[in-house]
Length: 357
Image (cartoon, rainbow, N blue to C red; front, side, top):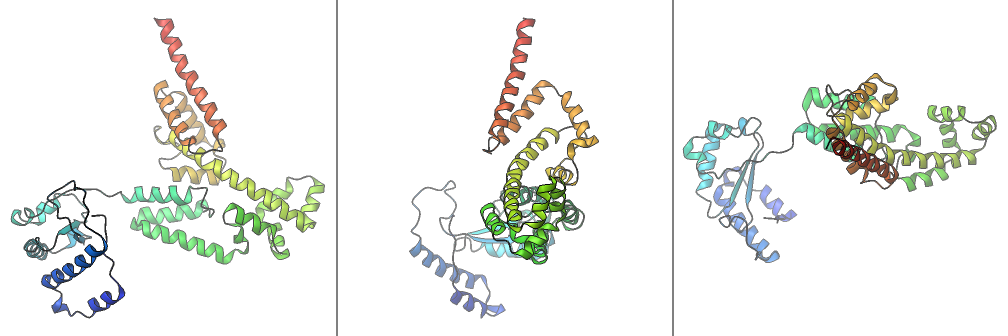
């Protein structure tokens, strides 16, 4: 009903002292009357009408059966029959977690019991949909500075798909990866939000500057510079700090560009036959981390399939990309070019139909 009951510590202690023989429906009724009386004093009764006028305008007692199929049928029948005799005092709501199909209720409960229930069916998201949500909010998000390597992603996803289908365990694996990284990497102080990272780079100690010089990525960067710049990077600590700040700014800007473009590429290719770049965006993300995607055969195959799409399908796919780009300010020039291209495609159809007429 949009409200909850807060049980204070004193109430929790009293509940813990109850013996098993004292835990009866009558005791629950008495507790419910006490709680709802206190709740009414704190939250005055709502005046607006409910969508279902038959539903009691009081706090429901929600009982969750996490694994409905695992319950003993006879025990479940007896429990429902007992609760049905107290509906005037306790507004029960039962939530059955069913792994098979809703018809399992009719199969496990006789009509005399199931008829006491007002059944409404709702579906929660599948495990894979929950995983996709975790990827969108954490891993494929420029606001989340911690980035996983392709190998770690593959291990975590492999455990999820082939062992437990547990999103909770996937998140725990992600948390463990973060703990390991921040514990073992002294330079993990730079793995944070932009302004904080720039401040940390500006105040690097001499020891941490040396650690940066020994990073493989920084060594590759030094090799691409002019000889005079290489000497400065290897000998001047202050210059290294300035360069680190510039590179961190570029990295944060890159991630702001990368994720919307990744979503656009996935939107264009996820419906292609045989999914040349992967069915899920996480697969495309791993490919982008491991190699230059535009140099792969899979990328060439995806381009060939896009070239033979019907014009209506291509325009629809490009419009989805335009919607994605509207959510980011940094790629507005790309969005304008894309909208101009869509306009030319549609104008081409009008010109063709005009000549035919």
